[in-house]
Length: 189
Image (cartoon, rainbow, N blue to C red; front, side):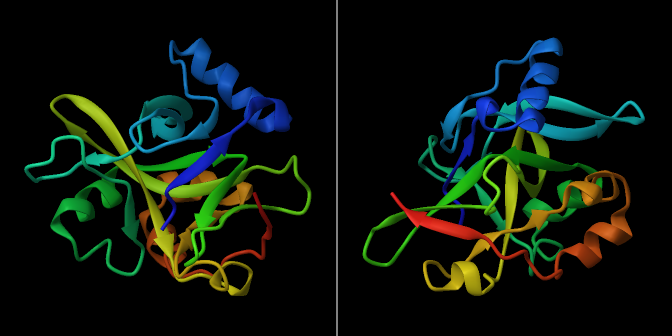
């Protein structure tokens, strides 16, 4: 599971540019540590082009707890779940991040990123409309060896060169659901 991540424009030129594009489009994405429910920068494909928008992270849960959010979807079953399948097929997105957090079984917090700290991590996701407002959700997958010793899930990470294909090519996106994930660097906070 990915329960938080960072969006730090000062950490990389790419993240800084994404924030600028979001602001130019009239959005104010959350900076720093991003929590479920925060309005976050998202890369989407709309009007025949890749765009930056901002939307809350998490689908409203269908329960008696109105503040509860569904923040992750399993890549292995996304096409089998009625709540997720149509959104995945029609409205994929990408979360630009500076890294993500996981907690170990003994509640220690770790941050994951690439060795080269200024390289963004792009996380695959999708979005949908709830009460005429967009909400996004990110995808998780089986962890590789760099994450498995801390947690039993990890985000589905895209290489930068795969972003447009993820957004526009459904066959590519379906295949990518089972791609091996890159090795990451972690440190305890």
